[in-house]
Length: 201
Image (spheres, helix red, strand yellow):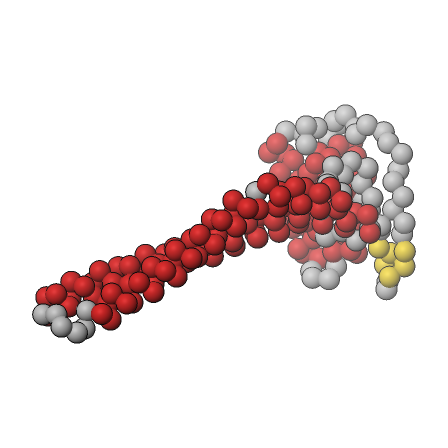
């Protein structure tokens, strides 16, 4: 479990039990606590503090607030690693998406949203290539048999077509990149965290 995940769970366990400003102050304190420990000491600090659930209970107890609902202590599976034991956190309320559900959702999205997205990407790309090709032909074609004014006018029109083509190509690349980033964000947010918890990192 990373420092960010630990603090995210701590915030989740304190939400609704403390005023928002007090909760943020506590999370900020423990963020600085991790930073003061230095790089490579995150797991040692987590062992020192205990599970996020237990730390939240201690904080709430110190402030005279109601405790978290009693639950069976999760199996943290402590194992020796170097000079400290690394807890194998398995939070009870994960709420993350299983890997198979993500794959099913991805296949469904590919079936229904894939063709329109492909049409947009390839349509923009093809239109961009054609505009660049036609623009270059117009610009180069203006070299012969025209007056200076005619040459400048025709070349200017060709260069405008080239610029439009470049913008269309950029639009195609941007659309593809945004779709890719959306898939990566969705996977990192809803899938990799659940895998992290299942493997106990």
